[in-house]
Image (cartoon, rainbow, N blue to C red; front, side, top):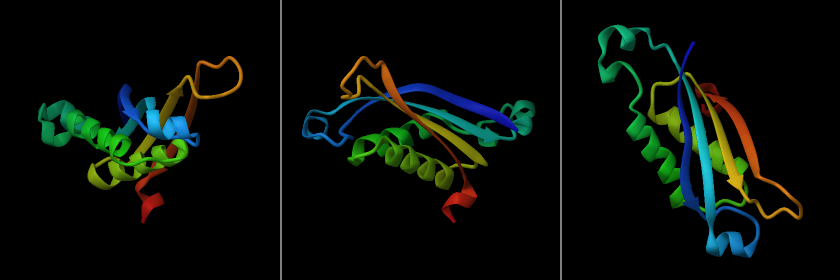
Length: 122
């Protein structure tokens, strides 16, 4: 299976448990691995035979900006669900990073990775 990757999309959102995360917000980074047979697209050179990166970016943007979640696990799941329902992809891997998460200690980022298929949402 072929893969299209959208790496390090950055959004500002209001996801978290603490009051400051909910009111002040913070930066979130998202990666998507989209699994799809790209043979036809490689031969046709036609956008209709692949996935439209700009539309997918907007979908992820909307998932990140429109709602507030306590957990980045929930955010990752909502992104996966939206992408799988709107686009012709067989499987998606979603990684959501929360740089500078409010953890007592030295920490660069917290990351959640989920793997989902269309069957997970039927």
